Length: 373
Image 1 (cartoon, rainbow, N blue to C red):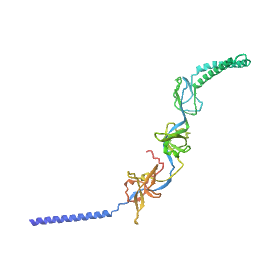
Image 2: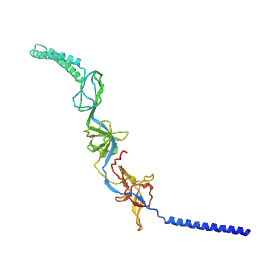
Image 3: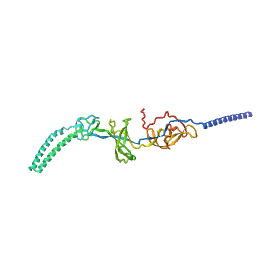
Image 4: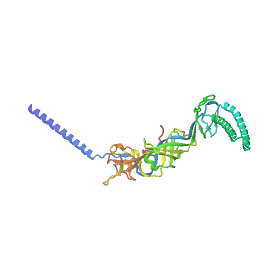
């Protein structure tokens, strides 16, 4: 009985030893296979680092203002008896806008004019009489004063009639009418807005650090959501001599054409000031950059060394500069002509083998215009 038990235990130990040996051989084979395993190359898209000449622009957000713009208002109190314009119409300088009731002044004018004629006659008579020494110089002076006073009264009434006949002070586009027939206008009551729309001013600010690069006459390009796909050109016409002490910015004004009058005062626009210098930059797609807290990097595509065929990836840290559309400038870390990975850099690692396939590479543009889907 004991022998059978011992033989059974011995047989079980032998079986376990055999199974352990087989398993050890399998694990060893897997380890050897893992050591010899070479991961397949990663398919990547690529682009060459190119030196490009970018226009040196200073960008800002501006506000449109009219070259001339006022809200036409009443100068004197009076009732509106005539409205001579249509809202939104274009008027010329001197066109009648509103006429107030001037019946009282016009009724006074004939009598005052007659008084002027009488005083003129009396003055002419006094001139002869003082020359013949018939009257004193004092009486002659009184005749002169009476004539001047009569003329002043006529001019005053005519000025009142002129002020109650409200005309366009300059050529421009009218706004919405704010008066009605029969309405009593008081001094300063608004009548209608009048704006000169072509040309039009663009007011914007730039940091004080750019003052050395800015001067009158520099070209500007204006874009606006109201004019999709259009660019309006103009030039800087005024530079404020005072720098804002709160923001340390300087205010500039450009004049741009607006013949179609699509740009209106109060709208905001994007302004690009064109500078004369066009520096060379090393431009790469922005998607080629792996952004990280410890430094930004790209993956450079190199040929494998030691006589091996194929391509390998090398992680290269770079310093970035200005962004322009889909591209970003590299100030250090890359050389012109080097090939880099343009997409999917977050899944790559240093020293990884790669295969280039640019069939699905997206188009990169300096001024991309995405579709509105």
